Each structure stands twice: as C-alpha cells, then as structure tokens.
Image 1: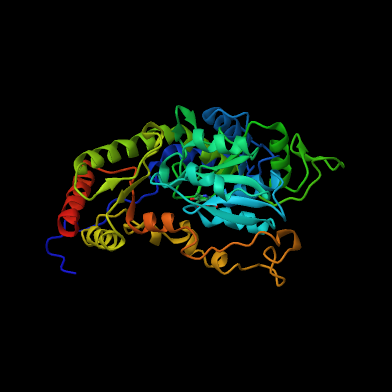
Image 2: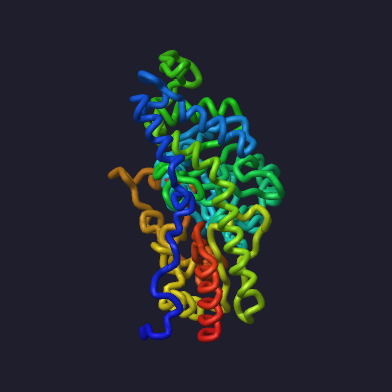
Length: 420
Ligand SMILES: Cc1ncc(COP(=O)(O)O)c(C=O)c1O
C-alpha cells in the first residue's frame, strides 16, 4: 500500500476508555490498600472494605438493590447463570453478536446455547426472539453490545409472556441506559466486566447486579467458596445457600481502583459521546453509508462506531482503506463486524465444533440435553451473518483530540469516495 497521501502517520489513541483516565486518584487507591497491608476483601490487619464500598456505590449508580464484585466478567456470567439455576437440560438464548464468555458459561454449566438473531442495532432482535423459545428454554441473555443498549421494552415483553428470566450482559455498556433507566436493572440479573477494554477498569474484574435477595445470596455463595459469610467469616452451616464455589472474589486493590473509576465513569462516557457525535456529524449523509440504529441514542455510551455499507466486499475495502490511513484506535484495526473475533458466534471454534473440556463430550452428550441439538456454524443465522458482513466497527477512544476527530472524519470521507 502506498503511504504518501496517508491522513495520519500514527493510529488514533488507545481505545481503553477507563484506563485512559487513570491518574493520581488510582495511585492513591492502590497505596491505601498496600499501606493497610489488607488486600483481601473480607478481613485483614486493617481492612478498608474497598470491595464492600464498591458494591454499595455501584448498586446505587445503576439503581439496583445489590451488587457483587468478582474477579472477571466471565466469572460474573457463569456465577449469575449458576445462581439462576442453569444446568443440564436448560437452553439459554444468546444473540449472534456477543462474547465467547457467555457461551462458555452456559456450556461449562452443562446447558445448551441457542442462537438468536440481532437486528440493525447489533443487539438481540425482539421480533425474532420468540421463535427461538422452546419448552426447554430457561434464560434469555441480552447483550448491550458495542456500547449501546438493547431494546429492553420489547425483549422484556417476550420474556414475560414466556415467564423467562433475562440476564443482561452490560460488559460493553457500563454507564449506558435505556429510556432513562440504567442497563442491568431491567432483568433478573445484570453483569459487568472491569477488564481493560471497558468504560471503567481495574485491569480484571466484574460485577453482578440484581434486585433479588435470593439470587444475590446464591451468587454471593457461588462466587466465593459456595457458602455464605457473616462479618467476613464463612458460615459453615447446612441450608439453601450451602452450594459449590467458583473462587471468583475480587481483591481490595482492584476494589479501591474500581471506586475511583466509578466516579470517573460519567466523564469517560461524556468524552466518548462528544467525540462520536462530532464524527457522526462530519460524515452524515454520505450515500451508501448508514449508522447502526440506536435503540436509545441518549443511553449509548459511545464506545464504538458501527457503520453499515451496501455489501460485504465494500465493507472489507472500506475497513482496509481506513487502516491504510491509520484511522483506527491504537490496538484495534478497523474491521468488519464479522471479523471481530469471538464476538461472532461462527468464529467460536469450540462452539461450532461442540468442544468439551471433558473426555465424555459434556454437555453436548448429556441425556438431559438430547433434545437440544443445534448448529452453530456460519449460516445458522443468515440475517445476522449478512448484517455483520456488511458493517464495520471502530472503537471511539476516550481521549480523542480535535485533530483525531478531524482525521477520522476526513478518513471516512476519503474511504467512502474511494469505495462507494
Ligand atoms: C460482552 C462481554 N461479556 C463478557 C465479557 C467478559 O469479561 P472479562 O474479560 O472481564 O471476563 C466481555 C469482555 O471481555 C464482553 O465484551
């Protein structure tokens, strides 16, 4: 590729939204825990109960009764599904565009994932959801993908009709909302990730939120050693909350950083919204280029821009043109959604080929799952496939300068002139 007329010599800033805002406050948080010699959340020589505080503050921020902090979003998903009783014989509905951790959680619990279409909002299509429900469906997982909320009104209508719980995966939509209500507070449970690519980050970490005391108690026991705690001490007593633990506790250093990041979250989201709004304004009205539909534009955290093109070939050329001009966030080449790794069902080999961690083929071979036989290879959801093939995705870094924004607009206009 000839580089002489390149719009930029370097990529855009790194896409890590929360980490871009790390500063003295996070440093002080780490030091506070280290100086107290108390990195364990439940007790220590001078425990600051940072994780407890994070949970209280996070629950208040999203408007749920409870929050439980964990050591990853993957762990939060598996724990939440276990708390909801997902196991052999259960089918769990998952959108075509999501993240491998969701299907990993389902499969490790012995249940079977059932794929459902997305629509042009790149979240679960409520109109095509109902046809995926069977007698064995036990849960619907909604994923607020690429920064923006799913249509919770329409999805909850279907879920209520069939008396099914909804688990909201908000890993990519921290700070987002739908019709003025924070995501994660609509379903039976919600989860977040605090991994580096997320709107607030502790490097690794996750959260579960719920309004149900029973589900919170189950999740608390399961995320830990399988038993409840009182005052930080395990309660080794038989009863409904004597279960099996996943070892998913969050440590105090992450808890302390998480509290600082939660305070910064509105600023991080506001910065991405400003940048995205300016980029959209600068490229509006280009024939052949359309924006992903937003179920609620005001609830979009603006962490990503998704553009739809007329077909797969032009989408590929468009992404390549942008990359040649360095119009991509630090670590992530701009790409077609379909090429976005294990966010797309058909890219997950272990799902397509029904792999198992165990030699007996668990859970695909379980007698309890014998009626739940599905295909996961490309073509299982042709509508979603076509949509993901003809669209491109780029993260909106949280620290874009006016120059970065101008370059992005120029780059998109130039690529459109060349490709469309
Ligand atoms: C939609 C979604 N769900 C779950 C996760 C898992 O989170 P973690 O990486 O913290 O395990 C991620 C991100 O990595 C994600 O994007």
